[in-house]
Length: 79
Image (cartoon, rainbow, N blue to C red; front, side):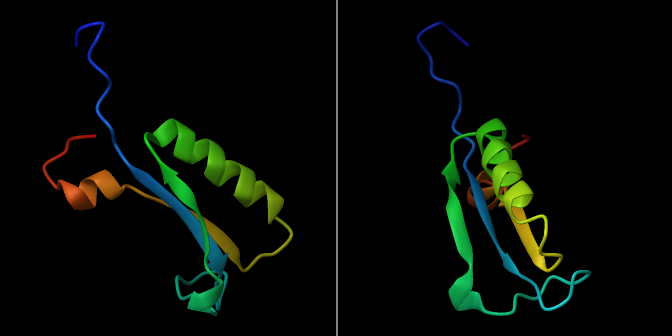
């Protein structure tokens, strides 16, 4: 990659909400999902995820996730 070439954009979505069960993946109320944001790389998404996860640590039903959107948009992406 040259000095003028921007790094490839690898979009990541951070979202979360309360689960019906701490060991499941079904949300209690889809209308209450917290869409934290979309980030241009994993490092920024991880920082946002970690902040939200730590802020809700007292609620065992609350979970936040990182979705690799770039993999959905381009399944052949290696990263």
